[in-house]
Length: 339
Ligand SMILES: C[S@@+](CC[C@H](N)C(=O)[O-])C[C@H]1O[C@@H](n2cnc3c(N)ncnc32)[C@H](O)[C@@H]1O
Image (tube, rainbow, N blue to C red; front, side, top):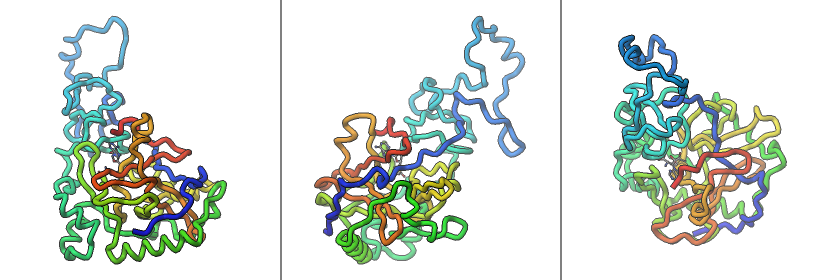
């Protein structure tokens, strides 16, 4: 397996990517319900008799929004109401931490629970099929591959993709990076090209995507991986961050942090992507998280363009799960609920 000889410890803060914690509009028990529109189902209304039956509170406490009795469908508790997501169809409540996988931030716009959702049949895919999809692409036939792509909701791609209407390739220039970006050495560039050629032949590091009831899809080593092995390049559609401010995709990755914020770029693996978007993050609020970390994500200037590469930071044993720190220095991705 080709290993990464880069001085991975030499990454400057500017070179470290981070996941984007994008602003959101809250829709939890703690937040006021949205005004009913002609399209949305009517909100639960309380009858006058109901209201009258309740004695007026002596001390004004929380404003009653009609959702006071909502509890979490999973744990049956109504506490931590700012984390209690309400389904936009059935109005049932779910703690973000009780959902599987955990929901780390309140989704932007409408949110429906699994029972009300007709999406993501991916959850029912057998592990074997997913493994095939990612490991030995050539061994699965075209029909199966397209079924899997549909189910996973993404098409396999080991390259950054540039789609009309999003950022053009010409926008991806490492010289626009605020404070500069570390340049991939000639030797590492050769390693990267070698790894990419190996990937194309189906010779990838031994990795499998598995489904964990607590973390959702996640990646495990299916054989030993040596320290400094190139794991994967983070791929997906390149877009301007400004186009994604209200996107609740939890896999958006920083690609270019520009002096001019309107030129800042992100990688969005919602349509195209590879195994990298399934790798779990550490909980960086406790010391156990740091102990689990076995790879890292670094941004490099490669032939004048920004690229995000994932590299092992120690030997990884077969069966070990891969983890890296989702947070770069500039944005706080909420990992406090992570396991
Ligand atoms: C980049 S995605 C990883 C793939 C994701 N697990 C899936 O099923 O699509 C990030 C999301 O994975 C979950 N996740 C990642 N690391 C986790 C961890 N250590 N513990 C719990 N959930 C985690 C969280 O739901 C997070 O928002």
